View 1: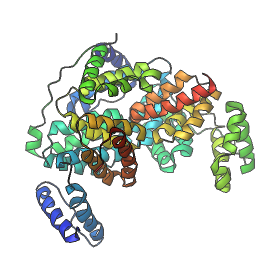
View 2 (view 1 turned 90 degrees about the vertical axis):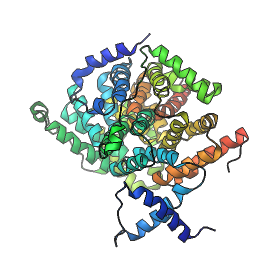
View 3 (view 1 turned 180 degrees about the vertical axis):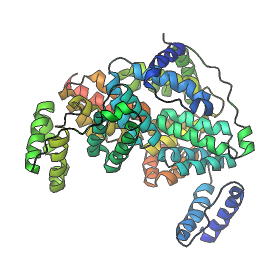
Length: 266
Length: 260
């Protein structure tokens, strides 16, 4: 049995940690009920559920907020992310990754907001150094490198699925360039590890409701080493910020994949 | 073999369409290293869809996205490519029926702001001469005729048998009357341009069944399969690449049914 009292205590502990950095709205007569629900349910409950560490929760949440598109929400979660120890370069890395899932303006808005937040504190600012990246010149080489990385992270069946995508068949020029840059350059970057990238992808596909593609990527997430519980927790975490019905839809896909692969959901 | 250098060169040639210096290279040089060649040098310049139609698709996607800076930027790109201020406004009037009121209001406000930035755009911003019909029945009648002309009888049957027509008939008559009988009758945009906006809007909102219907109408209207696919890759780059895959699935099904 979980009591509200327990949730309040957990929430207070977590908020104490965040309070160093996060400007909180204090309960006002107007907001009192909302704040109470938020504190108990979100900070004391969703964020502290077992099975997914705080940093990965933060990756999922930033992604959901980026797709939601409310400036204040992205700003708040970028600050939260920096507070739980995500580096300035990793924050920017999330938005570069999302260029391929949420579209140009979501990434541009995310990067701009990230820069504003990073500039707020000297320690975040000083950690904001450009990554050393080996840029390839030939699209062919990018595609080759991307294939190697895909096979490493997700395995051969996934690689085949990507190479046979409808985009590759029906808009081959654009899809070749997109896949080249995405798998060959973005996945080669050292700012985020494959598990972190995978969390962003799952959250993004769930938030936009691409359920078929989400299903495939739940499989890739298992291949990349996330366990069932972590995958489900990514959905619960991001879904709290995008809308709870998204969780149900995503879990339906996850459940099918777990059954097909013979692994247990919980 | 395509190289990143070639794409960057092409992107530079494209610079005449790009109105403002971006703050992004300073924030994330890596973002620019990817985005400039891939988008301006790559996706915008794939053969099979002309630049203006790409701009219509992009403005529609940006309108659905709802980021003011993104929409303003693309309105500038559109005007620079030779769209008229009335065409820009025409896009948002068209989208009233596919993206909802606030998207249209938001679009028109952004458009006016951008148009007022330059004398030549402002001077060209004159209202359209429109002959408004008096009754909803007349509008429906003209709408039916326009649909028959552009999309054929099958489309007419589908639209007249829509669930909205059956289940919310009063509202639906008025909406269809204004959309097909007034907006599609306007001279600011051509039917091809309108269709590109509609395809981009339905894709961006993920309305897959209705997208499938409209892919058929786009073929009826004379857009070819390559153009339709390119509308999706263009708009999808701004809305999120997974939308392209979902849209192409619908397109493939329609192309197969029609044997194209």
